[in-house]
Length: 299
Image (cartoon, rainbow, N blue to C red; front, top):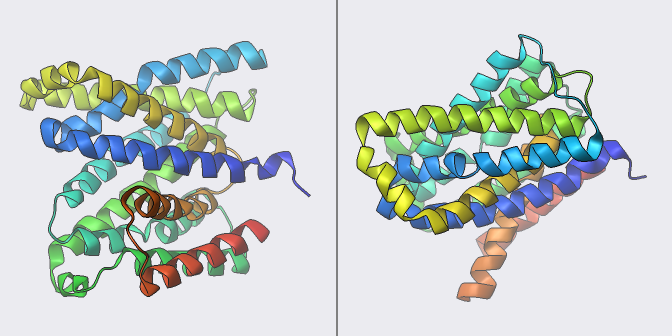
């Protein structure tokens, strides 16, 4: 039976679809804006939309402005800072010749999220869910690999970028979940959206100060490209809103494992838009992802 607690499932699917769209927009801006400029647009242009989301949530729910405990802020900073690091490393990887290998390591995020969630938040997973996470992770790694890509496994650079980026994403997810669940006296929607607003504020502030000090021209370039940046920022805030709603309802490991459906969305876009056929290896990987995600949802 579908219950309110199961809402994390559609929330995650919507967030994953939004993230695929945001990544495509962000990737196009990496060239003219550089790694950190492209990273900043999702925060700088996403923040105003998060504020609008929050105003709408307060009006709809009737909740008062939350008063978080002191524990909220360390969790928030962990989530916000780790996401900056993870996103920057991911964009660096996109321009690396060993991107395929880096992506394979990057997809260990779900496993690392489960470990960090258990250690820091006490999120317990059933044996079936652990098996589901492992199967889905293997599937996405198989799908990410390309013929000849195995040569890159001998290189330390893609290994470090992939594993560190995955760890940062995993810590970020658990940091945000930790922040959300410290907020009492408000609906989960309000707690999630409140966390999103302050998370994006911290990220915008830090990256903008960094760019002002190190690359002020990038900020002017961002303003010049405000139209595509605005759309990417909206999609980033939209996807994050649903990620946070999901984090409010279940362990981050569940969310990040189900999020692997974004691989299916990306493959569908490549197939229908660019007529890229699927190899037997990719079909096998997709099958594993479907099995893993199916087990997770059924568990």
